[in-house]
Length: 283
Image: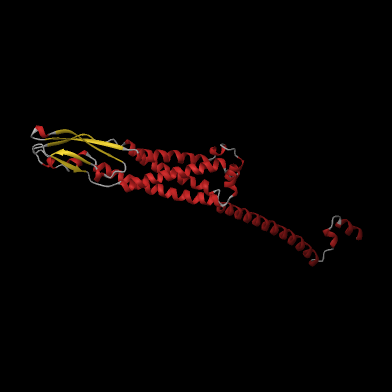
């Protein structure tokens, strides 16, 4: 039984046990994890600036940043080590395009998976009867598979750049006081990246899920059903041709045997059962 018949015969929620429905539910869940771990991220790093004039020092400068990682808008105050003067320092880099693209794909994938799951669950008969619905489902699945691959790769590269731009050792180079050898600058602690690393993993897992689901969606389309019908028709035609050839060959053997007897001048009684008995009577 193909998936279409299984969908038609399955109960309301039994369809979720089939590969097509079950993978859609996984896509829905993994899309939530992807945009939640990326879009909800906020990090902090701390550095210290120890001036020769201890009164000007600041041994715990906190720098906060978050999604969508427009780091050029993130600023902090650092001592200039010239009396009580302070300077405002801005981070470098803008990685919002890759991050927002990744989250956008995750949100749309979440919405489409939710809608598809509802259709599979409550409108499976209409889905199976309408030939256009599986085709649209197939095309959208292919597009999302490609977009997940692109967005996850772009976000993985952007995340690597964000880690470099927010590295405490790199941030210290932006502070003018740290360029003076008489002052001492150091890192108190860096940011934690486990959440963003997880978002990249979920991105590529979503690509695997959507790419793997292409086959199950394709089986519902008229393209697959049409090719299966053509293959079945070709097999039946081949079998019919073979049977016809076997029948013709049997007819040829029978007619050939009769012609051979006539050419040799043998009496026709030899071709009949009891032929030798009739010949003995003639003797």
